[in-house]
Image (cartoon, rainbow, N blue to C red; front, side, top):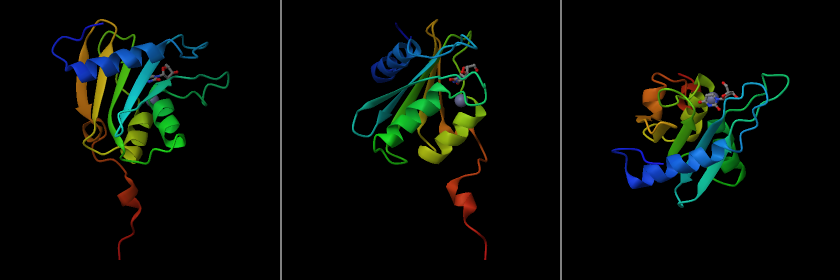
Length: 143
Ligand SMILES: O=c1ccn([C@H]2C[C@H](O)[C@@H](CO)O2)c(=O)[nH]1
Ligand SMILES: [Zn+2]
């Protein structure tokens, strides 16, 4: 599908996130989300939300993609951009837990491309999504 005014690269990534939505395991919410994470080698790591009868173990699409990439050998900071797609009126927006995980695993100025099935999109950086975050550096003790 087309995303008016969005670069070809990011449009491709949002369409990859849309494909990943099809793989969502959502027996409880029925709310499908897909993510596509582009690494520094040009490889795309896919993610979808995976739910659970106990509810709290539900994993969002964004974290699925990020954790898969780490498990596949990528290290924090080795990502160019993540695209997220959901069936929302406005472009989907990542939950607070995923924002915290992005702060941990992505560069703070990494773009997050958010879209919906109507072709709407929005781009924000990781730090714009979670200003004032508690980061790995926050653990360094004062003297
Ligand atoms: O950005 C988001 C927002 C929600 N969800 C999932 C969590 C849950 O499975 C369902 C409803 O919140 O959507 C995501 O995967 N990503
Ligand atoms: Zn989330």
